[in-house]
Image 1: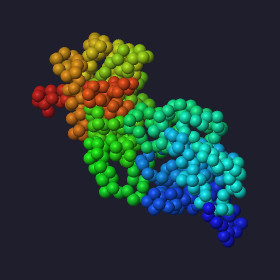
Image 2: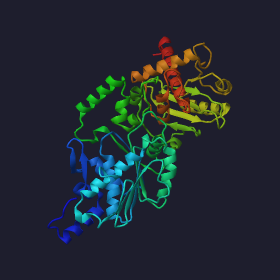
Image 3: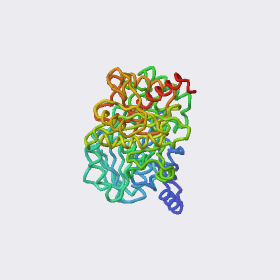
Image 4: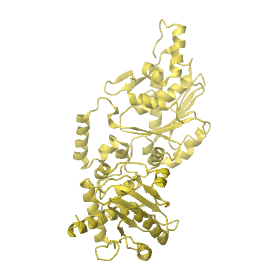
Length: 483
């Protein structure tokens, strides 16, 4: 405990007012954390990214933070949200969750939250501690903090909820069902975690992606490896080499020390057909063009169409088409339009369409993109799309390896599609704008050329068909001496 000497009442009142008004001031001025390298408690001097995150606590009720390792973010939330609220918002109720009971106890205990409290000036502490147990820490001002494993904690109404290492929680959905109702009174919930790459479709990642897309109420924060000031390019290169030496890939590097949230969210690449780094290098995330822009450009009003570039008069485009049955339980039908020369995403069309309706939509999009040639997967319901296009459309239907319209997919021909697409991404001959297509391409397993069970690969298939169409079109142009 920090002893108080020669401190006036005026000084105390002023400092308490400053701390109550500013989390940043409180943490920077009075909070201490344990430094493993110094093996001692030291002042918590905030970096700019930590200050920015602290300020977000005053603006957002639901915060999800994806981060690299060892950035002091758990300390930041414990000190700048839980401890701050317990002192300056009397009767605060802070719930601290971690995946195991012993970890939750550790976060509440003298090594973390209680340790920070004990090192505050005596005049800033509550008059007394009323409960001090492994799972509960209560102050005489009515504030209390509880520690729980993520399997417990329901039945409380909280002002502050921290879920630590949320992506590593094995029972995430059950935890959310228990914890989220505690926030109904208007409290704040903060989930923080590094990524667990063994769970590409985890609940934590789903919420983070939704927050980034603006489709849920959560506020997303990403904190890369270089937030820590002493980490530089030399340090990062050393981590990269260790990852390559130990595992033969950058999966471990991107899990522990990502430079971008896409690196953190990437699937494990060791068993994938197209290396994740090549796809990441090709990915230039972009929002689809707005309805206003599309209306002004007289683009086709087709449901499920996401357009990223408008066609140029002299542009050459191709389309890959993957057809599904079109009922509510079937896979999606998907089409991808790319620039034949640059490999850049122009548009994607995806949805649960009946084959004949899908053919109509494909025709509308193809006509808009300068009557672009298309390569349709001929298997199953693709036959219906090809027949509909033959009878109603002027679009050129490219042939497969058997010289017939459409691409008959078998083990050999599918391997050829993915081999050519992999080469294109390796040689930086593709530009991905559509996030859903990018994620599906990431997921394709090398041994099966399919997405893992429960995931979809329709847009991935449409993308590799489009890249095959570009090869065939440009090869034909060269052979025909069209240049």
